[in-house]
Amino acid sequence: MKLYLSSYRLGNDSQYLKDWISNNDNKILLIPNARDAKKNAEVEKNKIATHKKILEELGFEVRILDLKEYFKDNEKLKEDIENYNAFCAIGGNAFVLRQAMKLSGFDKYLIDNINNKNILYIGYSAGSCVVSKCLDGLQYVDEPINPYNNDEIIYEGINLVDYTIAPHYKSDNKESKLIDNVVDYLENNNINYRALRDGDVIRVNWDE
Image 1 (cartoon, rainbow, N blue to C red):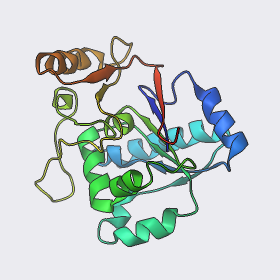
Image 2 (image 1 turned 180 degrees about the vertical axis):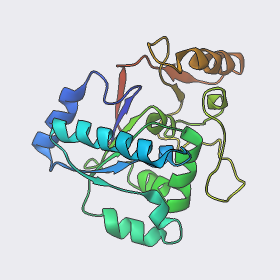
Image 3 (image 1 turned 45 degrees about the vertical axis):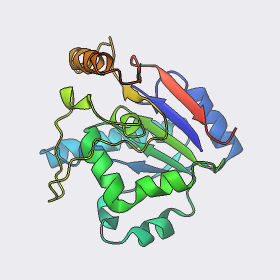
């Protein structure tokens, strides 16, 4: 699996994604569930459309994948995504996205395919945070909530990287000051982390 983890949107390494499209098909599934707890449905619809357009302008053919549709049928998720090799999870609340990935079985899908060289996972902001080893510390920027009628809050990441990702660090972003608190917590608790400024990208090739 190839991981493309960004702080803000697609970051400053989008040529890598264009090369992916050139060497693979251009179909991608856009996962918007980090935004499920947002209250203004019309605003969120427009924001998701913006993220879809960003991918389309890069050359992707985009379909929305709403993980909520698979909470009661994880097997159907595997059936519906079997013809897709690229996924993009956008920003929002990392705790909400992590819960959606667990309830749908998408986290297990990623773990099971970690050595599959044909899979690309793009995550930015919350979408990058969830692949961390743990989400502890991110409560200083994202409210630990679960909007899916389940009291459980998950602090364990998917653990595709062995550190916690702290996006928007020292950036011109409204969450940047809160990320300072996240980084302080991680350092004070000896938690391994990578702080990303907006524009920064981490690329990980598990298949190499």
